[in-house]
Amino acid sequence: MRSYSWLILAVSFAMLAGCAYQMQPLATNHPAHFEAMAAPERPLPRTLAYTAADIPSVRPAVAVNPVPETTRGDRSAQAAAQEMVVGDGKVLTTVPNAGQIVVEHGEIKGFMEAMTMGYRVDPPSLMEGLKFGDKIRFTIDVQKKAIIKIEMMK
Image (tube, rainbow, N blue to C red; front, side, top):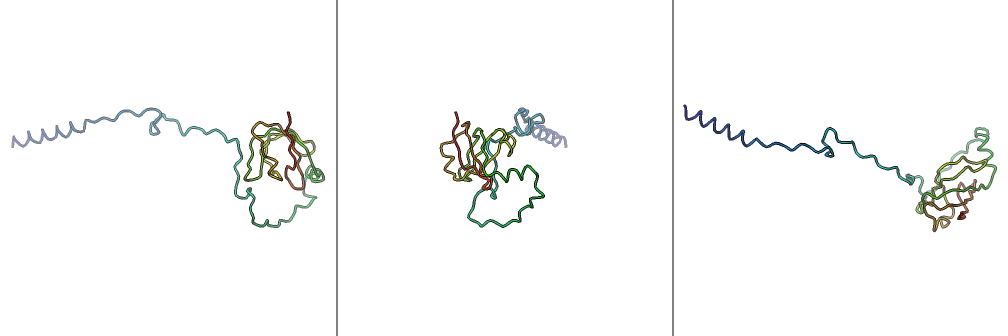
């Protein structure tokens, strides 16, 4: 029986010696490390995200009942009465396949406060040659809800 106890002891020691592997500690940039940061924050995009409804298609438009004039605000009624308005701004980006331009502009008197906004351009060929940072003067046709004229400024 003595010979078996030495054998059991030797086998147990060999098994324990084989399990002596120790994992290296995780670096702090490893995702499983408890001090690791969450996913890095992505920078905000400089373009607008468009849905399928924003991109022109060959599908017919659905008729919608217009909002009665009495329910619109006074400012909207004044803007609808104007046919054309002119604004000055800076081009942030163009979206040729959607026929749109994103402009950071100042106040358009009696029409809109200063803001950054995407506008439909009709015809889209007006956007040719425009790039980020270009200073422009643009004319909006209020009825069409589109920019119909773009002039480069210095």
